[in-house]
Structure formats: C-alpha cells, structure tokens
Amino acid sequence: MTDPARPGRVVVTGATGKLGRAVVAHLRGVGVDVLAVDRVGGRDPRDVDGEFLLVDLTDYGQVVEAFTGGADEHAGGIDAVVHLAAVPAPGLMSNATTFANNSAATYNVFAAARAAGIRRVVWASSETVLGLPFDTPPPYAPVDEAYAPRPESTYSLNKALEEEMARHFCRWDPELVMVGLRFSNVMDVEDYAPFPSFDADPTLRRWNLWGYIDARDGAQAVERALAYDQPGADVFIIANADTVMTRSSASLMAEVYPDVEIRKDLGEHETLLSIDKARRVLGYEPRHSWRNHVRQA
Ligand SMILES: NC(=O)c1ccc[n+]([C@@H]2O[C@H](COP(=O)([O-])OP(=O)(O)OC[C@H]3O[C@@H](n4cnc5c(N)ncnc54)[C@H](O)[C@@H]3O)[C@@H](O)[C@H]2O)c1
Image (tube, rainbow, N blue to C red):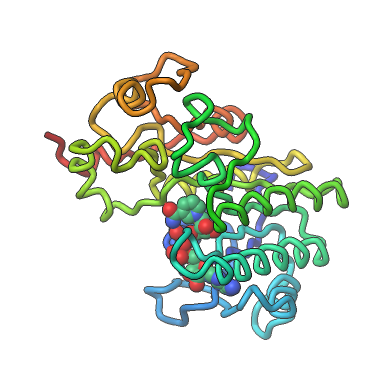
C-alpha cells in the first residue's frame, strides 16, 4: 500500500459474486486486510480464499456485528466498506423482491457504517441509471455523470435511490466519504469469446452503448475509490476504455442514434460511457481490453 490514505481493514459485501471475487482478490493482493461477506458461500477457497463471514445484509443486526467486530473470530477496526451485494440486474427476480433486497441491504450497510463510525463507503451503483436500455436515446454521447439519473427498471430505480440516499447520509454527517461506482456490464476473461459475433448486429449491444467493464479493472476502480478522501457523496462511471465492437464508435452512433449529439472527437473504439471523470478525479485507468484475449476477424 503506497497511499497512506488507503484504509487498512475493509469489509467487502457480495464477496462471492462475480465482481466481489475480483475485488477481494485485488484488494488482498495490494495488502488490504479484507473481511469478505456474502449470504452465500463458505469455507471452500473457490468461493473466497481467506476471512469470510456469512451475512444476510437485509438483517441490520448481522450487518452491525460484521462492522463492529461483534461476530466471533472476526475483528472490528473496520476502516471502510465496499458494498457490492445485490440482486445484480433487472429481471432476475420479481421487481418487488429485487427492490426489497437491494434497498434494505444498502440502507443497512450505509446506516451500520455510520453507526460504527466508518467514514468511507464505496458501493456499486450501475450504468443503468444513465438510461439503459436507451429505448429513449441518450441526451448526448459519450454519456457522463452530468445529467440526472434516468432509471428505466425497478433495479435501476433502486440504484438511483441509493445515490440519493448517499447524498442525504453525507448531509447528515459531512465527514462521510461515499463513492458510487456506476459499473458497466461486468466481464471475466471467459466471457470474451463471443465478442466478435456482436458485430453482426449493431442493435444487439445497443442497450448499454456497447460498453463493458473487465472485472479486474472494476477492482482497480474500487481500490482507487478507497483512496479518495473528498468528503461527500459522488458518483463515477466505471467502464473500459473501448467498446465491445470491432466497428468504430462513431459509425455505431451514426447508424443507431443518428440524431444524438456527439460531444467529442471519438477515438476508433472509444467508450461511449465516459470515464473521463473517473480518470481525472480517481486516477482510474483501465488496463485490460477484450481485444487482448480474443482473435478478431
Ligand atoms: N454484473 C453486472 O454487469 C453489473 C453491472 C453494473 C452494476 N453491477 C452491480 O455490481 C454489484 C456486483 O454485481 P455482480 O455482477 O458481482 O453480481 P453477483 O450476483 O455475481 O454478486 C452479488 C452477490 O451479492 C450477494 N447478495 C445479494 N443479496 C444479498 C444479501 N441480502 N445479503 C448478502 N449478500 C447478498 C449474492 O449472494 C452475490 O454473491 C451489484 O451491486 C450489481 O448491482 C453489476
């Protein structure tokens, strides 16, 4: 750990999930002492290799125990929370179930962190608040954090409410640092094989403007966000530097969204989910691309 501001002991929720596994491995790899929590998983190192506690985040008492060292054999002294646990997309469970789980889990995490005196919370918001699936065209491209959330599903509505909730927690307690990371579609290396086939139909991945986030770069963004020390609530789009397509970003926009204003000179494959703010403020810089893993035509 080169940054003295980076916390020493961190709870990661959703630790056995797709993004959580990458985040836990990355943080442990840079020397962060991680208490991994999830409602599924166990002692099998294929779940999480290291300290792990089963917690259902919809139960406030369990969250408080996890954050204060109340659970046997798990020390307190937590400096920060990385909250990734959620039903991770629309349409996986009923809308009401998704809302009940995700809103209760996030409220409990935010409230228990505050009660435990934990100043830093980094949590997973979502690209969906930008207006996915863009049946209504984006206001301009690349999309960024400058316009108000446009949730189009119950899952996304909850993410937008979480961003609003964070703003109020920070108003109540101006010392808090709460960073919402609006992740794009999370990918592991094994997910890259079909990417070249996306080119056949430009509308196939239109729903998120052809974006993605490599789980390893998502983990890097979490590390960067944990080192961020500006009190208050803020949000950042976290995507890779390129799209999922072989075609140019400009040609995709011209064909699929001809009336949408393009606000910058786009690089050949430049992401249409702007990561300029994350680059500028967090020092985030994606290191991975599907193009390094899959042979292209
Ligand atoms: N996967 C994506 O493409 C994507 C895109 C944008 C944002 N996100 C967000 O990133 C985060 C991680 O997503 P993921 O892809 O790793 O999902 P995932 O389903 O692989 O992991 C989520 C984890 O959260 C846990 N969880 C859910 N409810 C819980 C509860 N009440 N108590 C304890 N644990 C609970 C699950 O058991 C699971 O292990 C989520 O917040 C998701 O909304 C995901």
